[in-house]
Each structure stands twice: as C-alpha cells, then as structure tokens.
Image (cartoon, rainbow, N blue to C red):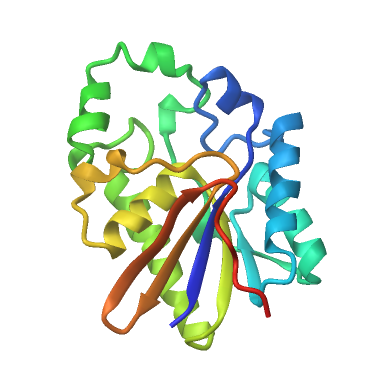
Length: 205
C-alpha cells in the first residue's frame, strides 16, 4: 500500500506567538514558513510522488503550493486532513489555556478530552485515519503520496497506525515544515521517519 509523506505546514504567526489557530481562516505562512515550504519543495523535487493532498486551510495550501509546482501536480483538497476543531479554545493563547483545569486532561488523558464546542481527540483521530485508509484504496501499493496537514492530526494518525495508545500521542513531536513518512501495508502501519526537517532523503525516480 502507499507510502504517505505526512507534511506539517510551515510556520505562521500563530505558531510563532503560541496561539491556537485551529480552523480560523486567514492564517497564512509567515516569512519563515514560506522558506520552510520552499525547502520542502526542493527536498521533494524529483521524488516519484503520485498525488498531493492538503487540508483546505490557507497555511496548508500555501505549504503544498511550491511542492505541487516542482512536481507538476495539482493540489487535491482533502477535508479529512483539516486541523482539529478546538471549539472555544480556538484563537486562544497557549499560555492562558495552560491555566485551565482541562489542560491536564489534554496532556495526560487525551482519550477522554472533548474541546468545549469542538471535537474530541478521538474524533480527530478517526477522521484522519479514515481519510488515509480511503486514500490507500485510490492508489497502487507502491505509490508515494504527500498529505499536508497539521500537528495534532499527524501525531494522532501516527499513534493509531503504530499501535500507540491515544493517551501517549502527545509524546510524539511534529515540527512546522517537517516530513513524517508512514507506510500503510496489509499488516498495518510502519513508521519510516518522524519529524524530519532537513536530513531525510526522499527516494528519486
């Protein structure tokens, strides 16, 4: 089944300032994020990527754009890759959120966390894993696919496919502008690379 290159979007000012952007519209890559997206495109140049899927938010589409350009591919809008719905926590500073009692649940027992007015982590995990499984049905087993998404969805997908309990998914780190390589086969998932920002060698065609 396909090899997924799970790309986290580049930096934006919400990441830089420690705010939770969630699904807000109008959140664009900043100067560093644009450079990260270009670096990703340069690294993936010549890779035998068959398709590029992206969360529909601006910061992910802007990260996917230079990759699509160098590979000569169209970006396919994939709502299943969208950021978690943080509900009332959206647009809040992480500093203020850390003062809330629910913050301990987010960090220590995410399996029972429901964001006020938003998704649970379990719902986010089910959404993105279902999306990736569906994509395996659309592609040949040797295809390489780029999926541009967000930190929590990528971490939750990795945790699911390697059999890591959801309560431990926060131990996974996925940085802006990074690549995580995940192979999905008939016997389950195999994590080939995690959170690689600069040294991961992509196979060339």
